[in-house]
Length: 364
Image 1: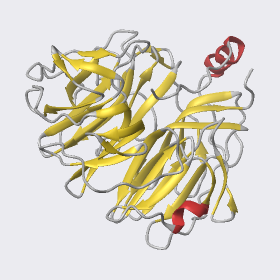
Image 2: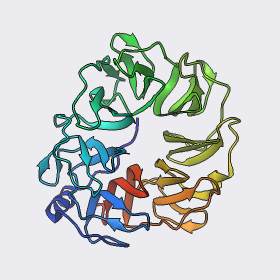
Image 3: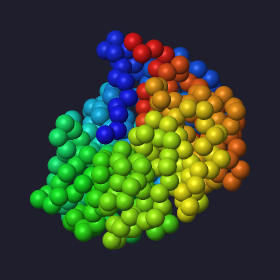
Image 4: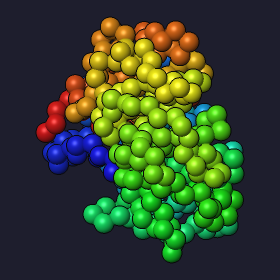
């Protein structure tokens, strides 16, 4: 299961809440810590908007200039807004957008398809009107049963071709056995026959080029040896011959960009989407990449406090970096807001990056 970031100690959390809104800065910020940052295309860090009071786990640009953020939190600034919110382009809360989730309904993953927002987490999977936050009553998926020893059955979602692909440490969807990977009908939520047999746990999923890419901690899919990454068909779920060996023991993020498949978690690797051979991109990152985001020809990288990166393409970067897809060269975008810098999710809109995670000057 996807590891949680280290929690802030109580005094530090209190200091964050007491600080309230910050000031726009370029370089290091003046606050003891935050969970949400906006970073401009020039790399300036903006903190002049209310922060959340807990851990963000997922973020998306909403296509309307704003942001969708899910996680384990109850408030945005002083406003009660648990687990799933919409922020305006300036980072402030859109109080009219309300998903009506209760506290404790942790959101671990978000996926957007047109005007429908899909969310997954401890509660399973739900669908919302992305414009209003209203829950869609016609989407009625089965309940996902978490594997023994885990509490959150769903770690990631991906939507394509009328299906919602679901991965995580679950063993059943309703009364039907499903081994860590399943697909739902995107309109009704009904369970589909798609059911790759994962020997281990799938934690990451991406859909591109007519294939579903799985990542996690596993050694086989459908009886074929696969080391933590695999590709399967989108309808029949048959594993393909694509079988790279990646230098990541726990795959938590996958980004497919043309012929490149970028793999992150407690390491980093880059492989060819057709042949599986390792690409020169692998050597560009010194350390591990936790999450990816892409806008146009630029890929953004985020790292963790414990398993992070210190350089990309020979240029010093502190767990936040941007790389051009065509050339593989690191850009000049180099925000460095806090000493301890851990990204759980990145989302990009018109070159501005919402960085969600734990950004602190001290671990308490």
